[in-house]
Image (tube, rainbow, N blue to C red; front, top):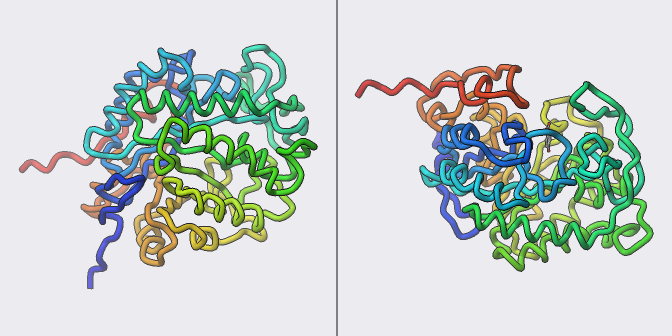
Length: 366
Ligand code: PHB
C-alpha cells in the first residue's frame, strides 16, 4: 500500500500557512556583490527554488564586521535592502514563506576581511583550534579574537530585522548554530567572560535572549525562528554539557512563543556529512521539548524525511544539498523523478555554473 505523504501536507508557521513541509535551508553561495548587495543572479536562484513551502535565505550578515567571507550578502545598508527586494519577491512568488537568516560569525572571521584590519571580535579572546580559515589565498590559522562589548551588536540585530521586514521577508531566523557568534556565547569552551554574559548557563544564554528581545521590538515574536546545532563541535564549539545547555535553551525558547526551532542533525559538520560524533544527542530529544513547529535539516532523503514527520520529531524538513542540485525538488519528489547529483564546482562563489544551471524537469508536453 502506498504510504500517504506528509511532506505535502500544509503546516502553519508564524501564523502563515505553508503549502508543503519542505524547506530550502540557509546555504552560503557567495554570489552577492563585493558590498554584500544581492544580485539578479541570486533572484534567479531563489526563483528556481520557490516551490519549497518555506525559503530561508543564506546566512546574511548584520554588520560589515559580522562576515567571514567575500560576496556573502548583508542586510545593514539601504543598497542591500533594495537588492533583497526582488530576491525576496522571486523566492515568494509561488507562495513560499520567506525568512532571512541573520548571521554574525564572531571568531570565525579574520582580520583580512575586517573593515579595520584587526582580528575579529568574539565573546572571549579564545581562538578556534583544529580548523583553518578559508582565506582568499588558501587555508590559514584562525586568530585570537578580541573580546567584544555586547550592546552595539544587539542593536545591530534589531536594525537587521527591521531591514529584513523592509525587504519583504516574512520573518527572520537567528543563526545560533555551528559555532558562530551566538553559539560562541552559549558554549563554555568559547565563553570565559566574567561579566553577566559568561559563567553560569543563565548568563551564557543572555546574549541570545537579548537579541530576541531586541528583534521583537520590530517583528512579532512569532516571526522569529532560531537555529541550533546541539550535537556539533564543528569549529571548536565545545561545551562541558551540551545536553543541559541546549535542552535549557530549547525550553526557554518554548516559553517565549518564537516562530520555530530549526535543528541541525548531529552528522552535519558545517556543510558536510560526517560520522555522528561520539555522545551525540538524538535530535528527537530536543524536538520533544518544543511545542511549536520544528524544522530538522541535515542529509535527509525523501524517505527519511517522511519518517521524521511520521514519528513526530519534525514538522518540516530542510533539504540543502538536494535543493542545490534539484531546484524543483518538490516536483521531483511528487513525480518520483530521478535526482541530479551535486557538482562540486560553483558551490561557493563564481557565476551561474553550479548555481542556476541545474535544470528543472522538462515540462510534460501536455
Ligand atoms: C559554510 O559557508 O560552509 C557554512 C556557512 C554557515 C554555516 C555552515 C557552513 O552555518
